[in-house]
Length: 407
Picture 1 (cartoon, rainbow, N blue to C red):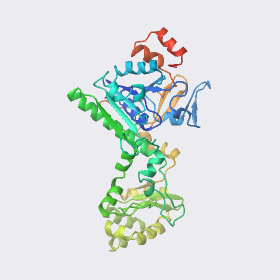
Picture 2: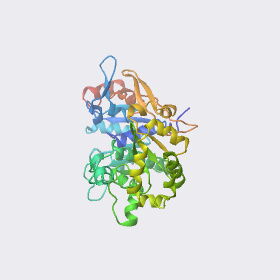
Picture 3: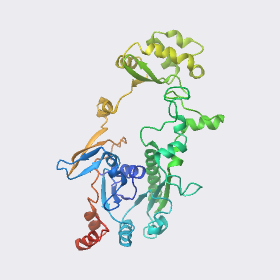
Picture 4: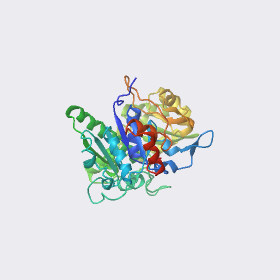
């Protein structure tokens, strides 16, 4: 069956992660996504390795990083700094619905590929710009990187061990989470703009900034500050508003307890052999447990070290206490639930063979996501895109290739 967005064509001029993540989501949902890349080098992440996935013949490889966010796309390698390259993009814009780009503020205007220029060609165009700090404000012209934004946006101030404990200090999240979240918000913005276009026929400009997204995603921690005036600090794996909600040692490792209400806490106490804790005024309610976490947590730790992680998980699950192991990635991708939900997928590539990929978590009953094509080699579909959409002849394409405008 056709995907939900199979009627749409997207030009993805973005690089690295936030923009390509949005493009991949749109592609998974059925859109035709054409990735516009620089000839010779392409997306920066093509060279971000090792590790690389190499073809059986040794003549083709793709970095694992590039594989992260570029499936279900075609690659057109074109030099947009050249006037003829710009003209090719305009031809494609006339036949497209969405543009994704993450150039610096004003970076595409000098090429005549900014929104104000392109909407003259296609008034129905949805044009999504992703930047580090937004199109205005005192930081607008600064480059934005996920690590930098995690720091400036407050995430690192609440991530890591608290002062005075081993390993204390600010810590970034283990993946480029701000980029990922910005890709998600950009996708939502594009879909909202498309919905508006369906009703009015109007295209529009969509903007997403990494710093805006990071601040928005501080969620309850932001509100903890805004309602009290006190900036929350680092708490390791503990939760500022719920206790117990963190990691605990076991006889052979660690496990996580996520006790969300007082009934679950009472069941936990029974399993641990200390039912009296549930009636203790210091621990009976979540409010009391948050206030007295320093007294409660050591007691829990002394109890959890008495059994292995697997034993505790089995016992606690039977009692309805939310818990789980701290899995490594090899354990994640062998987990029966992860496998049952299709989060481990693969796609075929003509040069690379079987290419692994992580499943899309969106579930649509009538128009499910699809894994149609592996991330492309640089310029892999240049000829067919230029013939099919831009209407160029084989001779014209060859001339562009010989002059280095396309590859």
